[in-house]
Image 1 (cartoon, rainbow, N blue to C red):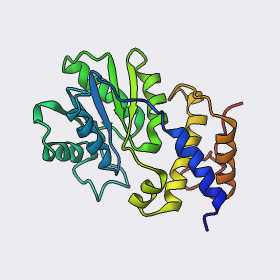
Image 2: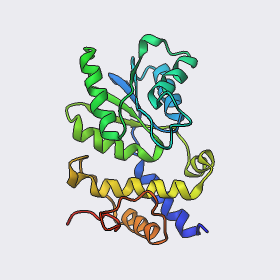
Image 3: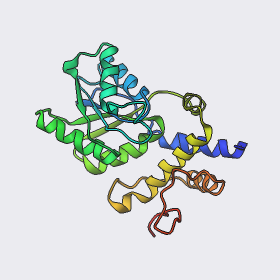
Image 4: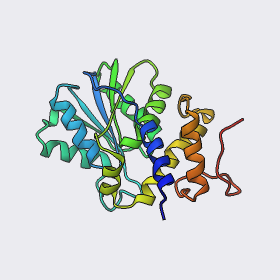
Length: 226
């Protein structure tokens, strides 16, 4: 049973995970692979609005996408973009990345090898992954400006699109935990997390929304260093 308090806490995490950036023209748009074709749709919309002259789709497959996207996340995103009218010359594919860090590193390498001059990146992710993606990109590609984007939708709309409310709450809690523990591991920059967001995360974890939380070798939920 998901309580009213659980939903209120989830909304706090949802709001925090989104950066609130206004899309603006950038050197390139990078769509981060996942189960969600909405990332590709948003990338195409931004391309057609003149926000980037080039799209890069990055991602291999994962246990959650292998059946849905057997040719790889980036390839399926590319196919979607071509179906929606983006010319093949404006789409690049990075098919190897299996996590957010690799998404950034491999896309950067692909663009450098192609001789593309990059000063700014329109970074497109799932709505609840905006802040995590931003923090990762700022760590691994600090010399470029990062503008975050995702499909504009409410938490309730996103839950309806996934069809599993508990899974969505678990994913939001997992994304928040990574913002807390990954900076010490060198994976992303530190993000200041407001006290009300930390309290919401703690309550959700205590209420059992833990399937996407990282654990240590003893099976204990990882906590921030210090």
